Image (cartoon, rainbow, N blue to C red; front, side):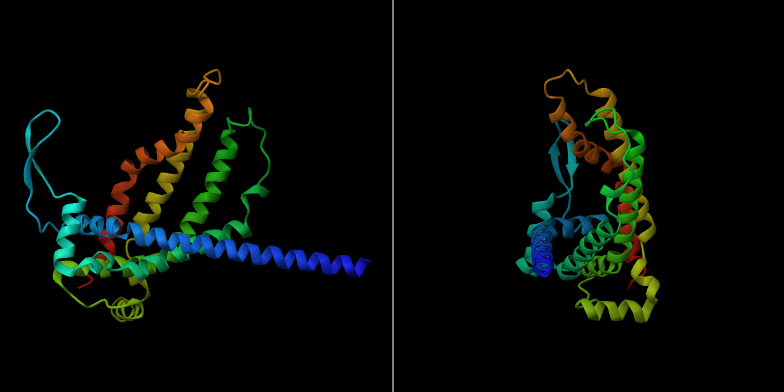
Length: 266
């Protein structure tokens, strides 16, 4: 009976491992698909960040009816890229971008399994919704550690992806393919070339996490009245709204990080 029970336990553990592996693989596949779908948006953003303006501004009117100059929007910019490189041109730098995001996802998952947040010391809460500030600080600290390490792991391929995309401006072919680009960067700049722009990106991540989590906590704990019938609904969206607002504050860090990634690269 004991042997049978041990075999049954081993079989269950093996089944659980296979289930987790299948779930992780599906999650990574969905992530890669989402990265591919949104890549044209990232591509246009990178070209705008480095100051490439191939399409002249056009006159229009703002909400007040005042005549102003407008730079081209996403669809106008995307049509221009298609005219130059064809539809496949919208996906320049996609492969290293997918690998970078995959490495980030895998590293985050591995760190969370190694240091699960559920094992944190339980801190008494005012109630189930208004989490204590002490717990928020501890959870944010752990989240910050995971984000910083995953950023370091994924940064080399992020640099490769950004440089591949920016080649559109000068019609260059210096960075071609993932391994070819890695070899080029290593030969010219050494290992440090893969981490250009890392510091402002990490600063942006850290500021974003702390501001977003702390603001969400204080708003949910002290600004949302429990007697309001939709209090739980409001609290569920607080972090999302704060994320949008804080993103405006931290965007300059990500802009500088992307510019540093291509600075003096040829």
